[in-house]
Image 1 (tube, chains in turn red, orange):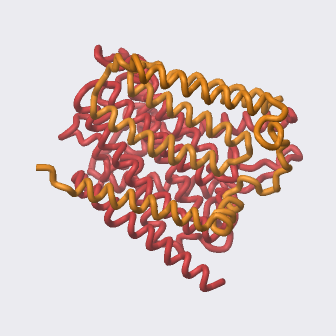
Image 2 (cartoon, each protein chain N blue to C red):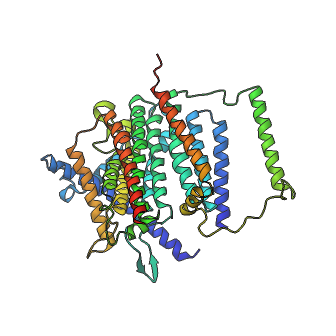
Image 3 (cartoon, rainbow over the protein chains, first blue to last red):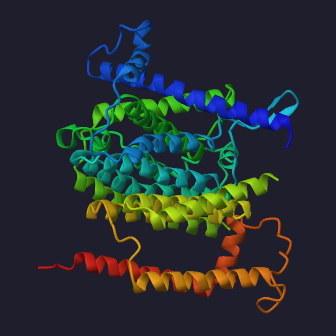
Length: 328
Length: 171
């Protein structure tokens, strides 16, 4: 193994990690600002220009807070659970391609940390491992509301994972590959949102539910469950959960862009810029949804997942298969 | 060299986690250690260039099945189980069968003429696309189509059974 490869990988890992953490800061600020304006308020404006340093101030505040651990908590798991959550979110970021390859210092550098040939499955695997961070956070607190919140949101994530995974299957059938970079390259002429519109809609709904965001944020329904699985977490442990929620939003948006919205492809501007623009648009839609829709009831959520989205995604897959076979 | 180090890492993690599953007092911790075993096995699968199986191992076993295990353990809420190693007959049989399996494995691995064909056969060279989803799919839907369909029907029966049990009114 040559030294240049090691340096290249290390740089890419650091860039992706750094980018993820910094953009979470920006996304939180953007969320508060956009929500504020949508509700006819100004939003944060005191810290820095346009209040852009508000999240940094909040982060420092969280850092200085006392780290409370409930007396009856399972000490080891209470410590491990937030870490599990953030690790799975950050690991998933590593397979998302930011652009096509570039030539730099005489080397062809691919714009993703790694392109395993089963990248789509790798993503599904990491998201299914992400459930542990939440369910263990809820259980290890040894307190009523966190346990209920943890069970709720993990049941929700498991249910929507199915339809989410199956919604991507037609893309794999169209391209014949499980590598996200190849899927991105296949969309140079046409974005897959056109032939796979239903798949796209199903994926988006599932993605919002998967990240426990409004209108599917039942895990942290304040009026019923205080704050759900992270009720007992304070200080940096809470910050880690917060970070992983936003990192997960970026992961599912990244997958949606790569699989349906033409990945980094776009006219004039270079690939990574297009990718970032699309990512920003997705995050804006997340916030828009939060400002618009009321929260679903739990039974509505479950019946939507199992009785509507799952059959619809299966039907979409079957129809795509038949069409592909008929076209030869 | 790197492969040996990774193998040692995954194998040792698997063994330590497996010992933890047996000896840990808290059932939830046991379940998590079992997840650890499954993850290290998935690492070993990758070393054997079976990425597809490795991914499925994580998605199906570590991701889906163990979460359901955890649900049941958490809702039953037995925090401590003092009788992890059941005394008496069960313990004796456990050790006996464990010993038998170990002797058998060692005998096959160590003896030059163990088994039928003489020790462990040398591994045949792998085809280029070995372990890829396409290769596995091809084999699964041609050579092993019949067993595959039978397994699918078995799983369907299990699903229907679960629904019937869940619908039955106990009262």
